[in-house]
Image (cartoon, rainbow, N blue to C red; front, side, top):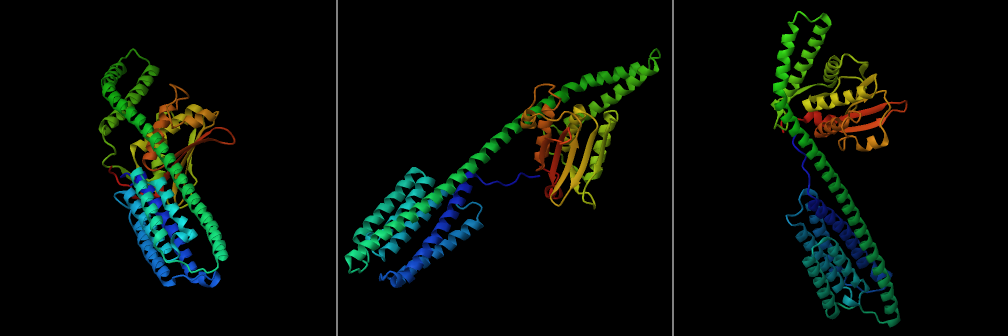
Length: 430
């Protein structure tokens, strides 16, 4: 299965910032339209209505274009900082135009030039923040000398309106800056959490890769002693001095040697390959039955059983990868070591295929639940250290999940979940 396409943190940050700028700009457009249409009647303030509506229209068109670019492109810009810089420059120009037709620097809403500077300080590198700050300062300076004044004959009423406008500007600026900072902080926390999870996954992958390298080396080194043991077992089997019980033990030893050789042969064939070139797709219940029966034969038919608890119908198909089979065998071995009998259940729904392995042992401790599958246990610690680490890696490789817990009535539960969608579309190549 090819690795999923992931976006870089910078791309995600740029897209999130642009979406928030688009949303904030719609509020500015709405406020400009309302003031243009209602201010003359409600506040008895003459405004240049049509120029203000024209500027609002230009902003709306720009916003629609920006919104479509954000939705249609996985990578909003080759240089995310330049894209955000251009958007903030447009906002400053648009706000300056609205202020030019409504009193310039005498308009208390002139302080709406500050939020773009605050946003730039949060999202842009230093040189671009300086650029935005200079543009905002130049715009304010121009509006002090060049603007269309508001003809208000009553000084007292003009002062009251100015104070009211300053209050509105303060509240709106606080809301915009606080909302933007909170959303950006949330996005940064989410990105940090994703990076921490990626680092943890990389460390687990490195451990699994190291174990795979050691396994390939062990397969090479063990071939000769196993061959020697097989020859000696053949010679001893023809020794007439040995009794029937010794011959039975020799037969069991030959079967175990043959099984070890098959494992080593499989490791050697797959050494250096990320995925087998030809893997078999088969019904999940048939695959589970085969793996379960082979495990029972190898372990001397222990107290164990399996069954289906699916909602009826045909069991879903899965890709019978060797790594998945080895992962399930590890779970079965761990359950048998913890305490028989072992119960295995196959279940499925529209989204997931679930295999549950339950034993009747003492269950997991809190420490074991935290460590299991994340790091290797000390040697021989209930026999579940490296096995669970490899099992989790094999399951996550197919987009699945491994969860561990304790049954209310006693014993441990290991649950293997595989997504049905990925199993139905997965191909046998890397």
